[in-house]
Image (cartoon, rainbow, N blue to C red; front, side, top):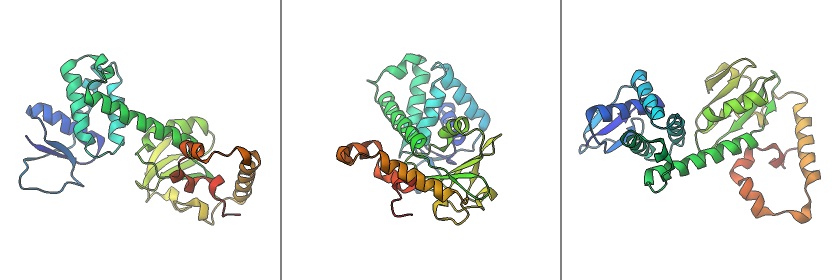
Length: 260
């Protein structure tokens, strides 16, 4: 058995899976080469990313799953969980061997059950990002929002905000992974920390002096609204934390009680 090394990209992982099938080899693991720790005991198999091979894997998955397998595998990849690559390989292998879309409903299979559980976690995080993203308007008329989600959900939330804020430019930046989305009212694109669009504001626009002149007034109004609708006698902290975990508070304007 071999250990396959890939470049950390989704296409790279799919290429590695393609090579596993081509080699008729059961991988001992599939690892991102950036985090791999060398060992003399392993049979290493470095993989060169090939988009043609990656596309063939996706087409094969979708053909055996009524078109849902490719999206599922992508969401699993974005979870960034330890060992997720080998889990994805096992799921792909299962789809290929069974050639039955209903296999994804067989939760007695540990790989199917695990995939469903991870997909649920990803969906929950996407839902929270839809609810907890707070934009702040900079003096260049672009709205900025900063997030640091547990999972790499940036590729999954762009469509939602593009539909919701179609008439205004905005940036959503993931400070944990140092990249984000930029929408210019026409196109949606990925940006990294070196992008010129971020030169107008730091990744934490809340403390940046380049905020729009009215932004602070709008934030104060937002805080006053939350204070006015809160019924102190009916506060339920446990329920509140269940729906709005404390780790998201640092980017929520209504939770910045120290700022005036």
